[in-house]
Amino acid sequence: MGLPNAEEVKAFLMQLQANICAGLERLDGQASFATDSWQRAEGGGGISRVLTDGAVFEQAGVNFSHVMGASMPASATAHRPELAGRSFEAMGVSLVIHPKNPYIPTTHANVRFFIARKEGADPVWWFGGGFDLTPYYPFESDVKEWHQSAKDLCAPFGNEVYPKYKEWCDKYFFLPHRGETRGVGGLFFDDLNHWEFDKCFDYMQAVGNGFLTAYAPIVERRKDTAYGERERDFQLYRRGRYVEFNLVYDRGTLFGLQTGGRTESILMSMPPLVRWQYAYSPEAGTPEAELYERFLKPQDWLAD
Amino acid sequence: MGLPNAEEVKAFLMQLQANICAGLERLDGQASFATDSWQRAEGGGGISRVLTDGAVFEQAGVNFSHVMGASMPASATAHRPELAGRSFEAMGVSLVIHPKNPYIPTTHANVRFFIARKEGADPVWWFGGGFDLTPYYPFESDVKEWHQSAKDLCAPFGNEVYPKYKEWCDKYFFLPHRGETRGVGGLFFDDLNHWEFDKCFDYMQAVGNGFLTAYAPIVERRKDTAYGERERDFQLYRRGRYVEFNLVYDRGTLFGLQTGGRTESILMSMPPLVRWQYAYSPEAGTPEAELYERFLKPQDWLAD
Image (cartoon, rainbow over all chains, first blue to last red; front, top):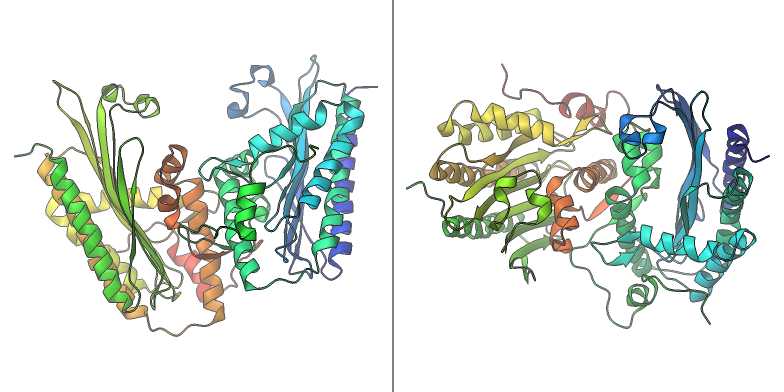
């Protein structure tokens, strides 16, 4: 008990991908996921699943990948000398959902596991992941519910877990050049190995399984909200921030692109349609201004 | 003669911005540039000029900036110890044009000057710049003409100039994660100070003034070409590569965003509307496939 079991993690991740895709298809009610399996010359591969042009989801991409190598790349061991000369495996599920209706938030979730082995030494391993929400026309009740879901799933692991990973999420998904958070946050964790393996793995499962539990009710509640050109325009404009974050700051995206990852799978996160507008700024007193003023700042959503 | 004269460079750059904007307005025949002047808290500022929703240009942004500081930022002197403790000025004109008609190429041009001074020492200075073309439905004759213009303006400065800066352009505007050049290239130079100041400045002027000479005939020739949804869709899709290049690789963009530059001016390069499509690949034998196969690879356009 407590020994790292990569096979078990992999089985969970593949099942998670299947469950999330099935759940999203049910929510969409119209479109289905297409599946691409791919292999990596250096070892491993993945399964990319994409739903496009649905009734509810304009695009949803759910990736599973499991890559491995006989020795860690030099770039990855420069700051982690304990990993030099080890073989490694990295696996994860990563998803980004771009709904059609501007009243449904965009969302991202990811869970991942890394392990590096060497003959005659203990393996080095850790988990990472999280989920975060990017609304265009937010409802405070949705945001509170989202964070309550995150807090509830963290509770069995200790009272410090939610505030710690909630804060990490706010810090990570921040665009310094805009002075804005990417959205209203959620959870973000990395390098998780300070509990024994089983507990860490349990937590990663709770986050992975908790994602749809948190997101589905918001989709159900907002998918039939009427909207017009104004809301669509604002959604396309705000999607630009998503692109800016992912291409300028997101470590996973940049690492993937720079190390010869599968470009199409990495850039499944890009929105299907995006707009930029020079010097746009929302008119005071509008719902668009409220997004900036009230929502795109780190705060305790569960206060009071 | 031969001593660096920053005031003269600045006067040229401001005039260049005015000339290019006037030239683009003439080409557009309908829309005019709006003007934003801005100041930088740490010293200097700029003039951003944007034309939107024209008859020919969906968006054209032409920036002038002149920023200065009492001492070089540490990040900029780490690899250039000769600059430590110096005051500096950086100035330039930078533009990106996104035409409406997919038969007109997108283009980018930039000329810039940098100088760092210290009491009792010679100033350290250099010029940089260039221009490059990003067609969607290229005509080989346009590409040859574009490169012939570039070669002609380089000729008075030496026969080695065009091939050297043409090659630098191909190398700089390359997307490794796509295995594609951003377009068909042009000229790119940096750190230019190996001639005396006057000759370097003359070359920078030749590049700045040469841009519209090279671009205008292509616009005139292609602006009335009929196109439909297919060509528009492909243009929007290919604009995604422009975004990917500028946000992931472009040094000027990243440096600007990371050092508190004026975000709206830096991101004037972003296309007004962009599309991403998972795993898109053009059908064999189509004009779209020809772009990839024949044009997005470095080559000698003036051979034969």
